[in-house]
Length: 486
Image 1 (cartoon, helix red, strand yellow):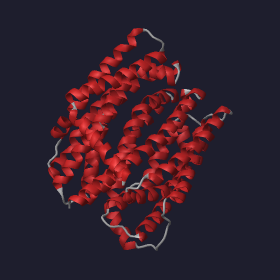
Image 2 (image 1 turned 180 degrees about the horizontal axis):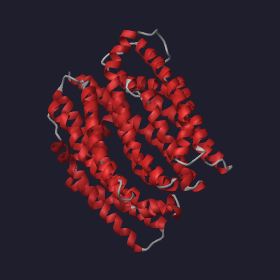
Image 3 (image 1 turned 135 degrees about the vertical axis):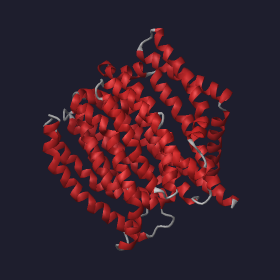
C-alpha cells in the first residue's frame, strides 16, 4: 500500500510538471503573441475578437464538456468508450455550428458590429477539431502522461503565432486573430494524433454511453452555466459601453487569468484522476487536497499581489500608454482570480467523488447569488461592477467548500487557515512593490526593480513565516527529481 501511494504521488508530481510546462510553454508563447498583436491592433479590434471568443467558448461547452470529464472520472474505461464519446461530440458539433451560423447576423446587429457575422461563421469551425481534442486530452489525463500534450501544444502555438503576427503585420486586423485560433486547433489535433498513441477504435456502445451520460450531463449543464457566467461581464460591457471598453477589460483580465487558469487547468488535469483513484480513502483525499490548496496559494497569491503592485509600469512597458486605462481593471481582476485555487480544488474534489449532482446544485446556487450582485452593479460604472464581482467571488468560496466539509471534513475555515501565511506574505510584498513606483524611474527600470524586490521580499517572508509552503514546494521538487532519475 505504501509503495502504491508513493508511486501515485510520483506520477501525480511528474504529470503536474509536464502539464505546467505545457501550459506555461503554450500560454507563454500565446502571451508574447498577444502582446505583439496588442501593439499592432486597436482596443476596439481586440474587443471585437473578445466578443467572438465569448460565443465560441460557450458553444464549445456543448461539444467538449460532460462526456470528456466523465471519461476521466470513471474508474475503468474501455476502448469503445473513447470512440463512442468521440462520435457523440462530433455529432453535437454539427447542430451547434449551424446554430452559430444562423445567429451570426443577429449577434452582429445587436452589438452594432457587422464584421461579427463572417467572423463567427469562420471561427465556429474550431468546434470540430475541439471535439476531437477533448477526447485526446481525456486519454492523456487518465494516464497522467502529459509529455505528448506538451510537444503537440508547443508546435501548435508556435505555428499559429507565426501566422497571426504575419497577418497582423500585413494589415489583416481582426482576421489575424481569427486565423490564430483556426490554425491552433487544427495543428493541436494533428499534433496529438502524432504524439499520443490513441486512435478511434471500437464500436458504439449505447449502454456505456448512457452510463457516462448519467454523470456527464450534470457536468455539461454546470459547465454551461459557469461559462456563460464567466463571460456575462464581457457581453454586458460590449453592449452597454463600446468594443474599446471591452478590449480594455479583456486586456486587464488577461494577465491574472493567464496565471490562475493555467494553474487551475494543471490542477484539474492531474489532480482529478488522482482524487478519483482514492475515492474511498477520505483521509488520503483530505491530505491531498490540503497540499493542493497550500501549494496553489503559495504560487498564486504572490503573483496576483505582484501584478497589482506593478500594474502601471507593466502596462506601459508591454502594451504601451494607450492601454493605461485598463490598469484599474487589472488590479480588480487580480483580486477576483486570487480565489480561483479554492474554487477549482473544491469542485474537483466534488467531481472526483462522483457527486455531479452536488456540482450542478453548487453552480445554480452560486449563479443565483452572482446574478443578484450583478443586477445591483448594473446601475454603476465598470469599476464598481468589477469590485462587486470580486465580492461575489469571495462569497462563492463558502458555497463551493460547503459539501467538501461534509464529504471529507475539510471546510472553508481550515482552507483559509492553510492559505493565510501565503496571503499575508503576498500582501506585504505587494504593498512594498507598489511603493517603488514613486521613485520616479522610467517604466522599464521600475518594472525590473519591482520584480526583483518582489521575489526577494516574498522569499524572505516565506522563509520566516510560511515554511509550510516552502516544504510543499520542496517536497514536490524532490518527488520530481526522484521520478526523473527513475
